[in-house]
Each structure stands twice: as structure tokens, then as C-alpha cells.
Length: 243
Ligand SMILES: Nc1ncnc2c1ncn2[C@@H]1O[C@H](COP(=O)(O)OP(=O)(O)OP(=O)(O)O)[C@@H](O)[C@H]1O
Ligand SMILES: [Mg+2]
Image (cartoon, rainbow, N blue to C red; front, top):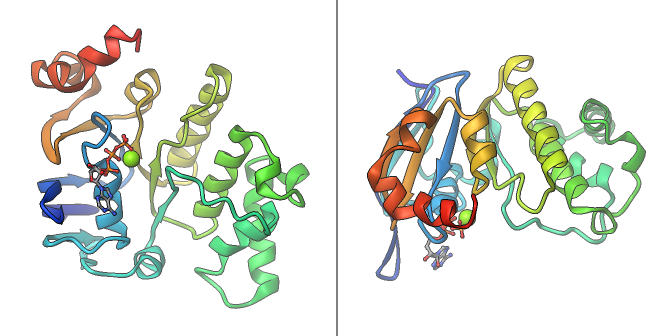
């Protein structure tokens, strides 16, 4: 039994098949990358797994439990955390309050939620910005707050949608180190969508490739970069842009 099993997921947006029979598994403790061109269906697949979308067909099993059709708060409670590609700028909320939204997944007690949010903020070295409104902060910090909010839900599986996008090389390096630490020290299984090839190929143990809603390849990063279908569908264009 795999940690996460995704079987034949189909998601059709009125004739646009964003996910077409996608199947794969993730084992506990792995770091798996999800890549593919814009519009390939990566975010849709995340949304189908966590319950932001209900797949038209297919099945999602997490730690032996059928979670297909669960609502986001239910998959969250089951142990699946996620960050958002388009950050939900909650203008009226401070960093601390944003992270407390995550904590409330596990508790109804405001003090407990606050304590846990402060703990996560401390762990990510975000204490100094806890009282800032999130939209006043640089993008790298905003992304880290998004990560903190997901971590506050205490996920066993953390799904990251382009967590490094818009960051400079030094900031990307910091994110890589942080993800490795979460994986090794906190035993969090990671599943990440990323367009930055140096980052995703470096941090992932295995990579899944989507194109036009279909899985076209899956394997070790070293094999994926040599895969002709992947080069044709996606990497060729990336290499032409100098990655
Ligand atoms: N809620 C929606 N309603 C209708 N169509 C949608 C919806 N969400 C996504 N799509 C369409 O589904 C396809 C896949 O979109 P998706 O956002 O999953 O791609 P992606 O691989 O995450 O792309 P990117 O790398 O640009 O983030 C696109 O053609 C998109 O326009
Ligand atoms: Mg996307």
C-alpha cells in the first residue's frame, strides 16, 4: 500500500480535459516533483487530490483511506497540506493570523492555535515579521508565510505549487535547504510543482511529467532530462530559454 495513490484521475472543464487518466503513487518520505508546460494540468491535479475540485472520475487514496471527494478541510485533517500558486493575499490579516488559519485545522482553541503558529514561525525564522500584513512583505517572505500556513496544519504530505517562483537564486537555495530539512528532520513527504528546473531536478528524488493533461513520463531526474518526449513537450523550450 502506497502512502498516496492516484488512480485514473479525469477532470474535464466543459470539454477541456485538464487531467486525463492520471495515475501514480508516492511513497512515505519521498520528494517527488511534478513538471510540465503551462496549462498541462499540474495545479488541477493538486486541486483534485486535495478536494478543491472533485474529479469526474478516478480515485485518491491517502494512507490507506479513500479521500476522493473529500473537501479541502477534510484532506487537510487527514494530513495533506498544500501551498497555493497564486497567493491568497489576505490584506486584512497579519502574518501570525495567516499562519493561525493553518493551526485552526487541528484545534478550535485560539491560544493553542496562536502558540502553534508562533512555533512554526520561529522554526522558519519568521518571528520578526509576525505582526506585518502579508501584502507589505517581499515575495520571498510571502512564499515562506504560505509554507508556514501549510505547515501549521501539521501535514504528513506537503504539496507545494511553485513555491520558488519569483525568487532569486539565493532565495531559491534557501527554499531547497528548507524543503530538505522538512523532509529529513520532520519526515514530511513532499510533492512539488515547479518550473525552475535547477531547483526541481536537484531536490526531487523522482519526477512526474504532465503534458496536455496526461502523464507522459515518470522517473529519476537524471532519466527525465534525457527523455525524448519530455524534451519535445517541455524541456526543449526550457533549455532554449537557458533553463
Ligand atoms: N477552474 C477552471 N475552470 C476552467 N478551466 C480551468 C480551470 N482551472 C484550470 N483550467 C484549465 O485547465 C488547464 C490546466 O490548468 P492548470 O492550472 O492545471 O495548469 P498548470 O499545469 O498548473 O499550468 P501553470 O504551469 O501555468 O500553472 C488549462 O487549460 C486551464 O485554463
Ligand atoms: Mg499551475
